[in-house]
Length: 99
Image (cartoon, rainbow, N blue to C red; front, side, top):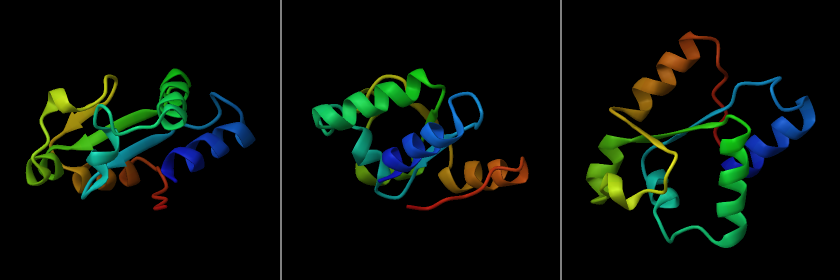
């Protein structure tokens, strides 16, 4: 759902007219594991990355789920805390949209 929301936003406002960041926390990191994405979702992730969308994955959530960095797809950035990143982004003027 988050992938579709990000794509739809960029489709409406135009690529380059919005800065989009996706933060994967709680159980979210499981969605970005190698082999977990179907062809459509993988294509959508690649397209969003090529449009400049940043994908952040919470290391705390990864640890609780037993996920290692090498288990994740290429192009994502592991961060120390998902909630910390969300608070920082909101402080920079980003809007928090939860699917």
